[in-house]
Length: 422
Image 1 (tube, rainbow, N blue to C red):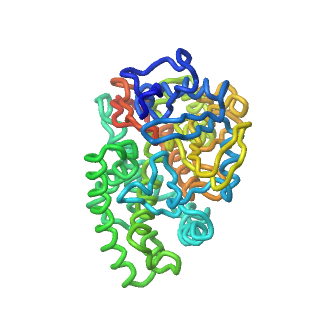
Image 2 (tube, rainbow, N blue to C red; image 1 turned 90 degrees about the vertical axis):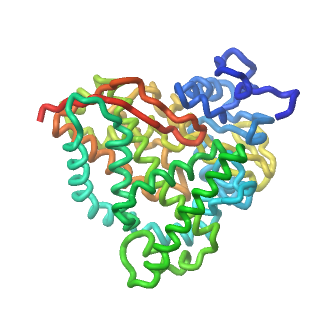
Image 3 (cartoon, one colour; image 1 turned 45 degrees about the vertical axis):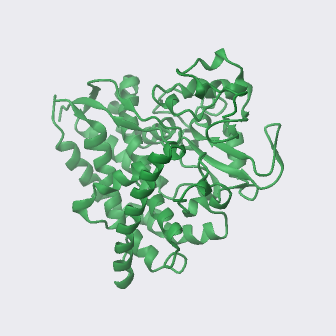
């Protein structure tokens, strides 16, 4: 960072966003996630500088896009705003500067993006997800029935991680006894905030190579066997993904692991946060369980598990009255757009009756919208329904612990006590 320019991220403590010039606001500061201070930072940006330029940060200069319509405009123009790893990729951290570049199809432009996405998408079509519904319900019931009553336990570990890991293991046909590796790898793959730390980033890269080695073995076994329905077998027998180079293979495995883990896992923890913050909404669900599906979508809106995606301008353009130059880094903040009062009135409030909850951008928009969106929503709705069947009340035993990150809205620990009437 240049000595002449100091941002809020360089301050020893988090500052009030309304107490400094707006050009100093740095929403890439991972500390903002710890107590959700980012909400007020983005509130001011949406009001005063919805397309906001920061000329210097630990991630270099970047634009922040914070209003709903502007985020959609960026997502809707992939020919102008590139996702490709060749131009920096999909995170505020530049991919091309790293040894492990995670060249996943979400970090590609068409036509390569479309070819690889098309390979995986059949496994996540509505018909396939419908087949998963009943086994998913059985697994959810098993996990909930094993929880202790009246004794503090970690909801993140015993519910959120356990349920998402089980589902991901089935989607990948991953060895059941080693499924604990999946959230471990996911946590390291998604931790972009350490990318500027040489020591921690070297450890991240070592763990990513470990993950790639494990999946290369599985990939070889599936390729030598007749085709099956799991995602690794689908990749191994596809024209577009059967002979990927190492970085593309590693990237797509990371995408499956992180995509199948973090979004649903943190939304399941976010559910408990919302029902503790808005107990009256949980009461509405108990009175009418038919609201569970909409409540699940509303939780995903508020949680916004992936806080941002990044694009790179391929040409000079204009957005929100600002001139974007070719090569500029443009960061679209889903967590800001999902609280845009112009679209979601009283946007910080959990409302199980919210009519337009499904308009949220937590899964992205346009050609890069998350393939597993419906599956994630079904998992969360099933969890809510099974909790309601058991008359469960889940209360904090201590304040939840969030992770320091500008990329994930994530919980590290959530100690709760549970009672049930059924």
